[in-house]
Image (cartoon, rainbow, N blue to C red; front, side, top):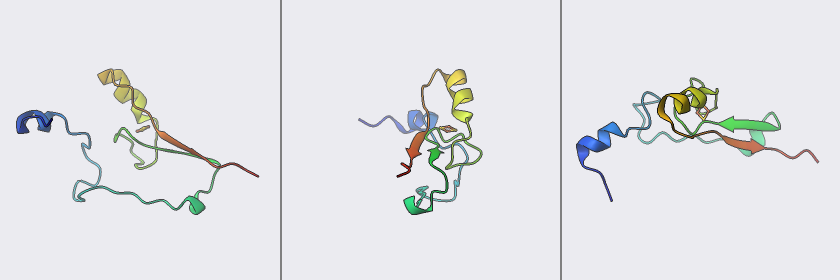
Length: 77
Ligand code: FES
């Protein structure tokens, strides 16, 4: 079920990242991962978006939310 338009505006997730782009899509080639672990932002508050910079902690404190990053790990053979 969808919320009424006014309520939807109160629920915007992306406050300021690439607002001119619809939708914001980030592509990352797995082969290009340079380290064994990379964290990608899912809270839309990172100043280094799409990479997590820890801003989710402040967001969670302020809002009571519980969001965190997507963590990609590369196994070393
Ligand atoms: Fe957004 Fe960490 S800064 S998930």
